[in-house]
Length: 233
Image (tube, rainbow, N blue to C red; front, side, top):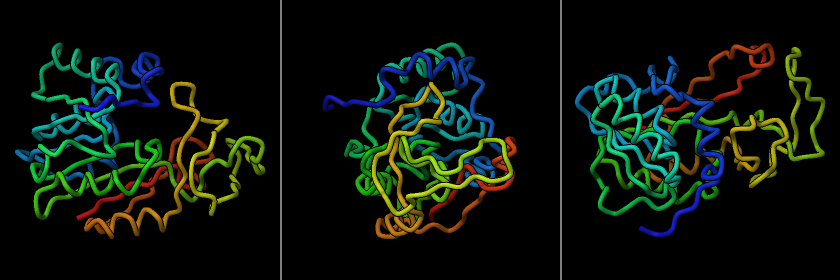
């Protein structure tokens, strides 16, 4: 295994404390709806962190392998698995170049709120497509690319909690520093246009077949969507 690095490694402990520290698992009805019935399926949780999505998949009846580049986050996931066994296997791996022994071995895969934190989208999508069996499916959730926060110093009329949120520089793809991200998250994230996601998944043989934009629980996310969920088949 190569010497992997993760932007989450130095934040791993504080991230764990802020995201499912008790190991209950992910609670997102939209995720559940897109994943569907996974009982008996072998599913990869790509960039799983400390495994909250992996735990939810296991609770839904899947045989789960959690993959992440942060050894510290994986250690938290392994400890939670030991405390409450669900049959989850955790592996240290890079979403941008997943291990070849995983090829064509999964019925489905998920990547929950992580694609926008991974530097290279195209190799990541190719890796995910490669580990799926023929006819396999993929579900992802990302920060909505149409409403990203601009780089530092270029926040445009952003009033969180108001009835509108205006953002700019949509066409400027690549890394940017977000001044509004939670402290448990890396400062740098990677913006891609919606068309880039659509075209990249289609080129990899994973066309997007369904998208959902749920209404959020904060006032600003009741006027524009904060998260985009999609399924590929």
